Length: 72
Image (cartoon, rainbow, N blue to C red; front, top):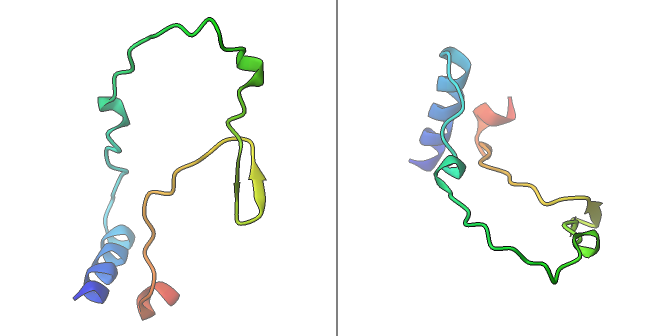
């Protein structure tokens, strides 16, 4: 069942004109709260993942794999 659904995603993406969906970040409203006590030069948004240092975090949405179709 899961393998079939993954193959459906690959088939749809390769056969149809698709576009990316809504990641809902546009639904987020941040309320400004001033933080005068923070020196933003001292804020480090970097992250270490898989022994690699990145200057900022990132998001991986979804990946399709694990089927023969995905391997090809």
